[in-house]
Length: 155
Image 1 (spheres, one colour):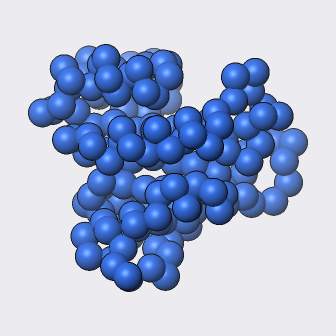
Image 2 (image 1 turned 30 degrees about the vertical axis):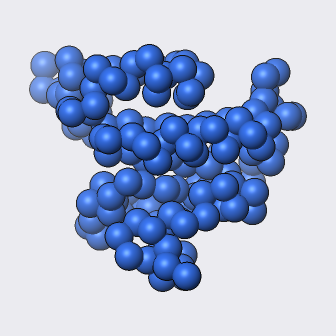
């Protein structure tokens, strides 16, 4: 965060990119099919699908296992850099089997005590924060014990 010298307001570094950022709140499948083609050569996509394990308790229209599989199938075909986060569910690990999984901890909200674990999949490890950024932002990002070539797990 950086203080604004004019008004003493706190601004986030993302502020400098405001004219180049586009935020959408759409179904992931329709977003990838409808919006991504226009950004394919200059875009980065971060996807945050609904939670798998608690989805039916949190959302009116939660996703089924088949929905998550369809999302996976679309994501791995993207031609631009991408990142997707999920709750740490064995079913999601199964769907994304073959991709390197990264795990990190966070607190979901003030009413939730303790740390919870989420998982991250990325198209390219260059998208990961460097050690200094992880330390400054207190990110406990760790690679799982899968052996990988690029982003694909070898068997």
